[in-house]
Length: 566
Ligand SMILES: CC(C)(O)[C@@H](O)C(=O)O
Ligand SMILES: [Mg+2]
Image 1: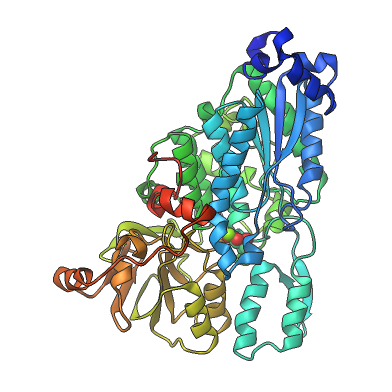
Image 2 (image 1 turned 60 degrees about the vertical axis):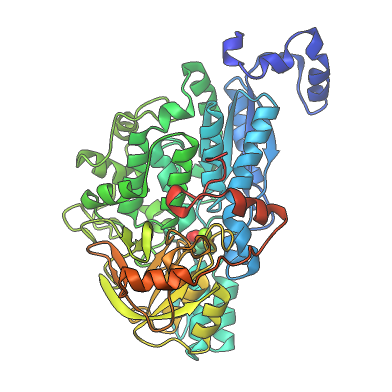
């Protein structure tokens, strides 16, 4: 066995002076012949913390089998995960985006420290997925991402009607309960039935969005983003991913050969066609930064002009991910996009083949009469739902998710809150009226810190029936489950002196998603006068991981990464 296949493990394991390392590894299950095989890490985000990751140890074992069967020697290691669905709306949620960096750092640390020649990384919840890919981009060692797979919908009879439920149904039920539409008993029915088992949140929320984006990027196996967590397909995907790493080692294909600028364009295209989460903007920028690929928020606008929204998926559409799985997954959609000239077919992927070759080799097609994915000539929206807005509230950019169902422009009066908690309280207590623009600030990457997701407020707005008459803007971000007239990632954030921090109750705010503008009806002089009286708030944390994060993190428009300007 040549050392070419073992560039990292050979210096660690070969020769008499490396006997101690081998001695340690005999004790974790290595046999003599294993020392001449490529050393393959299997990064597992297994945790009992969340249903998204509860099964990942099973998947990791399967990937290890695949790597071993293909001639490698696999070693499984763990990293952490957190759960947005559980911590949402609490102080704890400030750790959510931070965890993306911690997970990327931890995978880099183990792969780097233990001399792994390649690795599989398995993620199931929103942040651990971009984190896995960021680690792959940083390390640039042959690697394959595995998605834990989608959860199935929960079912319950509510007000005499059989309903399909998921995590967002519970968040919206909270708003319905607050407005009196749901009784205590109905709320309990929803909460106890919505999450039936293993897998990631079931709509086109952030986990399914990022899984699809990573597949389109070429870093996971074809159609692996559209598989149920509990399925034979997912088990096969895990085995094949382990084996695929050995193929990449043999062919000398590294993540940065795959994660090119064109591959990121493919990922953006698929996210738009699927109606994906605003978090895709943040995470793709973060992943591109790790791969040292030039990508900016304005690329979403350019690509968004030509790519239509085709998927009728939740949160704003009708179907859940399990329905997309049932009709054939993401491959037929990607083939449609490729044939229309909207995808680059020449991008390399983890199969060792190009995107076009993978799509041509797949027998999958959508059945006649399916309603989940619209044809290109009858889209839900002819261009992107992800809008990058600029204006005197967001000179550095902002991200909105406007599918058109909410209308395309909104003018209203500001109701300003210095935290998500205050805003949520006001919405639940009936303090928000038609025509209000709820402003939630000091929730940015540095100011929050950690850019909490505003699923509580956006769902409470929906649950209270204010979805079409109220808008929400924030320097924080949104859940993939958020919908309505909402604008996040406002840059610069309030903590950095951004104009969102200068707004007061009653200011007239206009959001124009056709012309991509967000502005307050104040001239430069009036804004400057307010700026002259502004002082930077004290940081909310001065020790620990949140304080470290706030010091290092870049703006949302740069992907909120922590290793860029060191
Ligand atoms: C809890 C959710 C819905 O999974 C959220 O974290 C998301 O961003 O999609
Ligand atoms: Mg989330």
